[in-house]
Length: 363
Image (tube, rainbow, N blue to C red; front, side):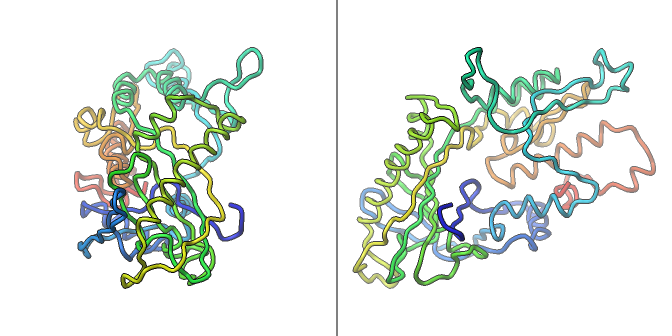
């Protein structure tokens, strides 16, 4: 960020709970977050008209002071778990049934390297970034076709995120809502006032900077990336992001100009000033449903019992945090089924019934 206190949730915007099992899990995360309340709905791109939803029962929950606080909470409060960060997994060696099985008891070795610039060609130029390629090399090296086939079938769509900061001496928000879906725009799909979330440095300020997050439509991201695939950290990539920021900002300001009201329907005497805008690319933002059916056979995950490999994630159940958690629960159950029956271990582990216990989901 350009200034201290500016921050944006440029990934998951909030968490909702549909299943009682996941609600119990989120209740255990309360120390890491809070409810996000306010005005939510949709905005029509053609007219700028905002429709506020009347579903007051819908709960949106966010991490505080940011969505990353949830994963930090899990990492720091789960006994027996050590988190290794800033590493990229490039392959797996060994495992049951491999040539190394006889000498290593079928144990797996995870091959990884520091995160950052990837491999280069013979001239020293970075190879084009392909998240799918990296994942593919790693999973294929595990020789677990049931898992890899499911991951390939899943598919995903990209997205751009515009991180915007505006200011208004009169304390006028850019839009009269906390979050809204955009209908009828070819570039913008979601607009959120990140400063309205609890625990943010700019939360509750009447005047001063407001941080907004704008997500692109999948169609716009696909079209933009089809023109030219660029490599993060290079000048062409930054140029592409600058163009995306300019185009998305233009759409946002056009929407704001069409919507001329603030609280109470009073016409706004001024427009907030944009003081910062930057775009970010998510190459694999939203999973598609190609793996759902395959994962359903294992309760919501992918499994290769002979190799003791399990795959899980939102691509197995639904493109939500809840989907990822439920898939993780199913994967944990599969892992336990692969372990030898040890009575002492049985007593130490939490209940892994179909009801998906909260303690399992935290694991």
